[in-house]
Image 1 (tube, helix red, strand yellow):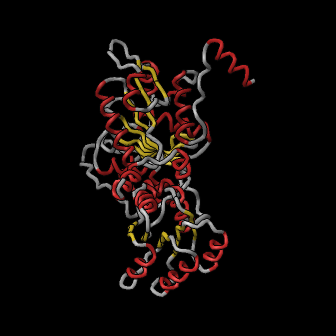
Image 2: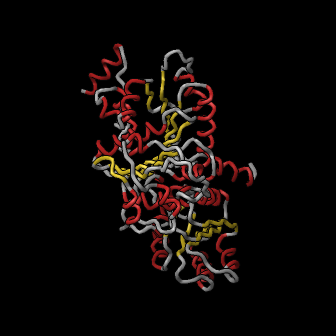
Length: 425
């Protein structure tokens, strides 16, 4: 395999499940500049992939070949960045000689990470003693690299960021907003944790109706004043829906058009994540720069669909696109809603899931009485009928998207199921 083909193979290879789990613990990196000088494609490729990760969106990452000698030559005429990553195959004596050359052209405030090919504790200690920030032994993964970068530039004493969870429908009218609102309510009640819902469908949002709220201000003021949004201003815009649940309501008016650039909601989401452990983003079924960016940057994405052909096509397009945009994250969650609607021809759940290569985390049956009653009264499903199996499914979704647990498998039938249950006792 050629070097180019090898690098392309590494770039396209999805991250392993263990790496994805580790990356979920990594905080977004601030606005820093990173320059890497590599000797092999096996190290250059994961650094390039790291630079494309959503947690590195604010950082600038550039990768060069040539190792330490190339870095020494480059910085004779160029300023040094916040972080230099150097791959080296040099033996210890030659390595220190090259590092001395680099020190003559390197800013003293620049941090340096070395990726070496010698697993030597003595070498590691000597490098750290001489001011190197970290020494990693190749081969390296994205999780290794981002863990180091995060440890160097993210304040360990800073408050943890809230988890952002985006809900979006594969097609209009599939009930994505209703699912988002009810899962948010479940999160706030089950875990007694603060939850903020952002209704991002400014012209047609329904969160204010579903929660029986009519706030004078909401998400529009936050977006149109993004330069002044902070924790205090955001708190003034939030409407309280329950003891631990707050809403950024959409104006749901057509007196103006709502055209935004791709970063319009980024500051709002950043601030919201600093104020609450869970931020639920109710994303409308449109595809433009800011919806794409919102789904790309969210910690979790939940796609809601109903079992018919247009939903299947749209869900596949969205899942395939998000897998490319988020190669170092788990696949989006799939919720099938409005299943078994009377007199409607439907695609079987297994046939719907098969082309998506994704099992639904919940299959919610069509129940016009329950959903209609709750909606018309401005109440949640759990407030309308707490004993409904649908409410239990929503609680399962809440556990999954918050990382607090997984849905328990139903016991298998027959003798095998009985034996498995007996073994657990």
